[in-house]
Image 1 (cartoon, rainbow, N blue to C red):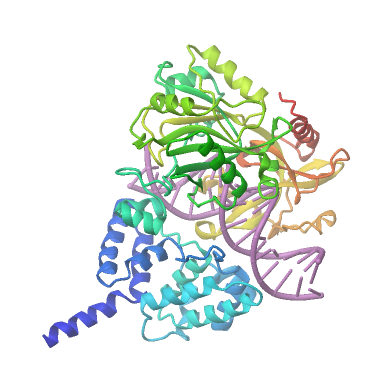
Image 2: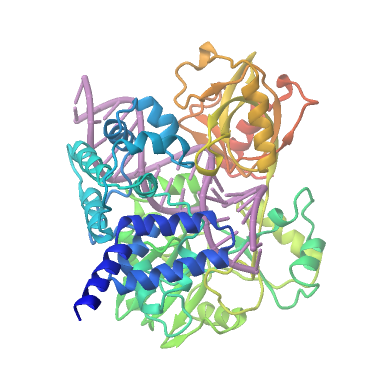
Length: 568
DNA sequence: GCTGATGCGTC
DNA sequence: GTCGGAC
DNA sequence: GTCCGACGACGCATCAGC
């Protein structure tokens, strides 16, 4: 008996320490095969369950702090964290900023750490409890308190590896290559609801708890360098069968899932956060609408848009009206998941469409609390093309094409989005150090545009490079003597870590022009700065000179067109 | 009270 | 949101 | 096809510091 107890105690201490947790994470991080990652995690979950830390272990893995409080701070501010690290290990703040704010390889850090290590590892549950206390702090002076508590935590670590994952948690980036989707697979529905806050929709449906939304894939992403033609879309996405699919406008707003049960309305965002209180007035209006129209219980998939004088406002303007003046907010329903005691996930889209069209009114120019989108069927490419062009003329983002299939939460397979994208030549001015897997490279670049003899910042860019390209660019620009900040940009808020002495022209793809509080427009017609939405690297243009970038006038005109609602 | 920096949400 | 990498 | 983690602009909320 005694022996068994001893053994149990021993195992308990082994598996429930932070050291155990950090070793598991290290194993998972090093493994590139997702299946193996998941099975490693599954094994660890069993151990965690045995020692009653399963919930904490999952939350730690997902950097999710368990709290009932809405006011919770999601991450420890970087300066607080770095300052705590610097003090704990007697390091210069700037060194921490550059090196130890992100611990990837242990080579440098282990030496620093060894002088400070504790011999025994803290119990995992106790560590998680302490972390939770940090995140629950708010209000004046809380950053100082946080710093003290972070220092405590750091000093409790018994290995450099533990410090690594502690820091990652505090920064809310665990980056072990395993995240919510994989964890979700290993949970049953009740755990999913409790720990992840959503349901998969695979079995019964519980109203009032969000369901993972179905998503779309981008046609352009899968057909790089190619012109959008309806013929190609018909062939690739629809297998030459136009009859079964639906075409809809793509409204540029905010996705909301609406639950109406027992006379109560709940709203959930795309990332499954509850938004009922954020859009309180809209919620109340919806409740009134549903009550008055004797609605059955429903779950609707909608896009929230914002009306003003009978016009739909651009996304950017919807954002700043969202909180103060919700009277203009309006929902466009484009799918239904539940109606009148019936789960509709396993109905085809044409069946669901029929239901939501029968209980809502079609969208009009004038604002309604909730309306339904107009779906079309087309017989040939010409009709498709006319519809797409009309969507752009009407100032919309683009169109959606939907197969006549079941609603599959999380899937991107059955919905296709087609958006208009544009290219522009810009000049690279400087670079910013990368983070995480890009730590040894530049991770993004400042781009400028030529105007009146000067280069003016217009956007940053950090996607669209292959790893090889990024490495090449980093080597190229870092090997040249670095330039300095041009005098007219000394006040610019987001200074690059490295100013380049050589300014090359890159071709950049973007979606739309935006008014910018950060990037200064050097144009007398504008009282705001200007930038671009969703910038991505396309290719280098060694054949172009900096004077051939832009011109900014094109962007300004594009911006005015949107303002005046004149398109194409 | 205001401003600037930072984090987090939307896309 | 976009994108590339790995499976 | 799926998942993950790099990175973008912008608006709002929060907190430090004045």
